[in-house]
Amino acid sequence: MSHSWARGSTRRWRKLRLAVLTRDHWTCQLCHKPIDPAIRHPHPMSAHVHHLDGKAYGDDPDRCVASHRQCNLDAGDPTAAADPAPRPMTRW
Image (cartoon, rainbow, N blue to C red; front, side, top):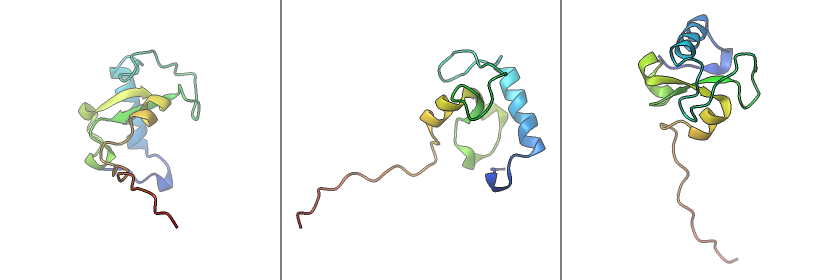
């Protein structure tokens, strides 16, 4: 099941998120630094959960890891389309 964040998070997602953060001992699995539970979104060091295969593949807790917000944003979504290769500029 993938998320549509248009209506906010769900109780199910919040429960899964807490389980992943607890399982990973509140340590970012991308930078390996501790996550402070007192820091709230949108702070870059706030707690997030990174989907290793991308959100399009669902919320399998075995494929999700604890992360800082900034680390998660920097890693990006592996299922997102990559930017196209740059093209030479046309001289007008």
